[in-house]
Amino acid sequence: MTSSDALFERFQTPPPPADLRARSLTAARLAMARSGGRVDLWTRLSESLAARLAWAAAVGGLVLAHVILSFPTQPAPPLRESPLLLAGAAPDPELAATVTLPRLRSGRLPQLDASIRSEP
Image 1 (cartoon, one colour):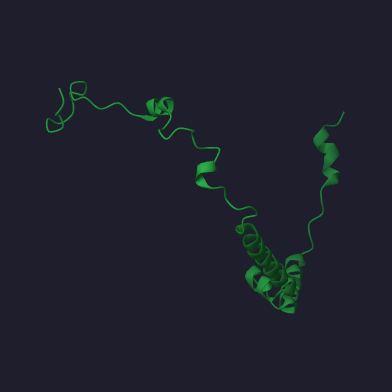
Image 2: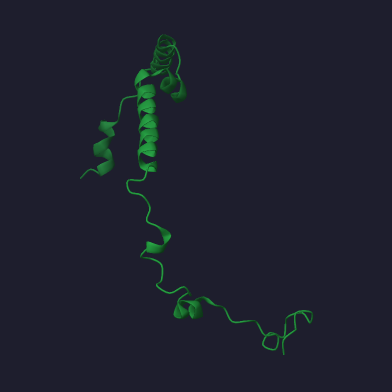
């Protein structure tokens, strides 16, 4: 019985042609010489009529939308008739109690400087 290495010895890949590298480099040089060099993206965009028209349409649309949306459709209601204001003249006591912070007492914070301690 033959080993598996002996079976695959006949299936060796042939070596590449000796002048393959020189031919491919010559073909690449000719192709680059014919193309005239690469142009960067910003140059192509600035020279493209379609890109300039799309940019102008986008800017025009944004300006038009700003002008249309800046005009109010209805006059603003008077301040006294606003439904968000409270009925009384004073602020809501529950809201005032929630929002008001308690005063600092120096007795509770011994690490504060002595110059701050004005309340007992």
